[in-house]
Image (cartoon, rainbow, N blue to C red; front, side):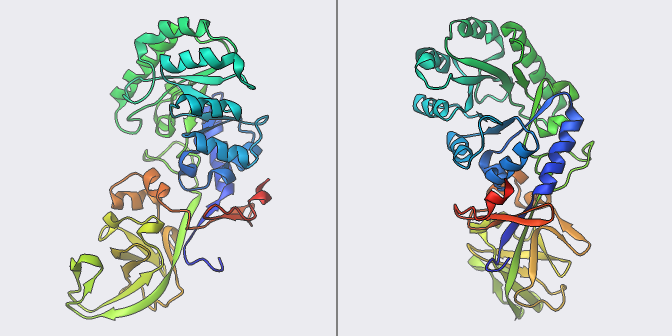
Length: 388
């Protein structure tokens, strides 16, 4: 893209493909996409518009500010319901009600507050009961189902919409997941959910492993983005995000020369290096040094140093590298591919964290049906309206 030396391209056709694929796999359960953290760096507004266009009826976010952003961007409350998953304080609850967003209720304190304000709001407070089945974070304990049922009977002017829990090891530990399922079922037996309530616990990894956890809905983020923490998922996924930067200088370094801050890395034999226009501020991590690679001329090139705004790579074997050449951080070039999961392993983190760290100064360029569909960077959303 003209003017951008580093950018992410988001393929919205792949978002639509992944959503349809997961919908077919879990049917008749409903798919609730998770768009928290700016959709893990993909751009929540653009994705929300495509998902609503696809007929999605519920979207989840983590924070009130994220729900407000989607409402301000014109996400229609008559077409899709926004659910805020993080516990909120009373003033936040009032604001959530004012924008007609649903939210998680994790404790009796919040239920007591709803009892006080339920009939004094322009919109009836709409909420999902959150159950802690083993995460130790937010939610009612499994044995509190009957007490919650009694408390719900005294609520006036409020609308109970669902029950949810969160798996702590969906991609790792089958025994722990089964314990959480049993605890959730025990809570539901105590509360006896009314007809029509959404019951949701399965995450992306659980969708690939535990069909008994589908309930009436599944809550997935990674799968919508074409990512999966489980090897060999039972359906095709298409990654939606690629990240590309450029070479800004090429130089030859002699033996004994140092590379990067701290003089910790030095050149043993003559080496050709390239400085690229992506650094830690853009989302690269220092922990990737000597562990991660990028693609130049279809060749894997080792990361030698990561600075704030640039990085240094070894292009000795990449052949004929010049300033202006494309460098692929995530994506394909020639016959080679580097995935977000591979970069995350090199960084010693998860791909959600890695993608979430790609800053907004790195523009997101969107394509839909093979055409340019808008751009988002540093609060600008030029052309995003074209997604409607």
